[in-house]
Length: 79
Image (tube, rainbow, N blue to C red; front, side, top):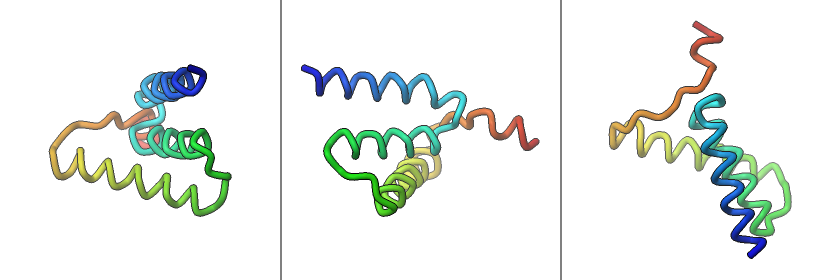
């Protein structure tokens, strides 16, 4: 049950952070945290997988399927 609680906790943190961080940064952190939770040791390759996975899912949903993703606070800070 502890593992399931960890999955729910990660999903909750992702849902709370995505509106502030934006879709890609929040999903990058979720993928990395899930990889560690599933037993992967932190490694530079894990960071590449997390960033690549987040960009892949952004392209799939935002570009290919036309689903609006939360931009986060970044556009307001830069624009």
